[in-house]
Length: 319
Image 1: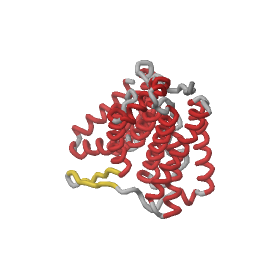
Image 2: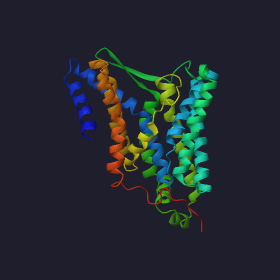
Image 3: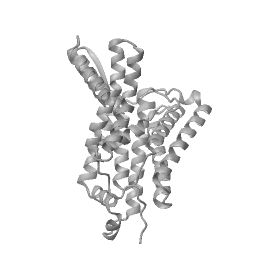
């Protein structure tokens, strides 16, 4: 925990006292927003699903599938927006499958999510081996907004901006709308919600599909905004880090975004410290491990103190 806190702290201090403090500070902010994007969308994905009472650890698999099919359809059609929509649809379809297993057939939700993760990794690896030249690179990337600070250009990608907007919209939906009230009611006490006339199964299905669509959108960050193509296993556990951010944020979108920014800062440390001090092997090894160390710390230290929705993970049987 100390290491996870000290390295980003030194990193921020370095940006503030460097030869170009304004540029370095803006670099930290922009890189943090960018690197936190898939974690932000993944945390929001998990929040929608678990607020309705369904555990979704399949975010990683949905994210990876979104990355692959987004790149594949972009290359095949030459239209990046078709690839973007394909990623969202694929995420939603996997979520629909997860919903069918966990809601209708009442399969253990952890097992269902694990099956989807394994299936997604195997499927994308197999298809990538068949379509390697097709999905390796896309003809274009999603649009972005560019601006200059002291003659230095900075860029915010479309998915990053969408992720920030989605957090505020998601928070409003969950806590300020009738749908959000029903979602939280189903996640806390499905029997009481059913008695009040709320269709528990419908609410859960819809929220799980929303969760999958958000996870698929997160996948486009890797293949359509960042790399501009697909590589095997390119999400590298980001879906699980997103779950840690969701838990750290206590199933609240705004709080989860704050946690995602912390993880994003840790990832930023690895990138910018190398540009400042060169490719020092031991430093690179430490900074690469920080996000995963922080994830372990969060899960070990926060999960017992946080309060999840009361009925999360519990299948509902209509009386």
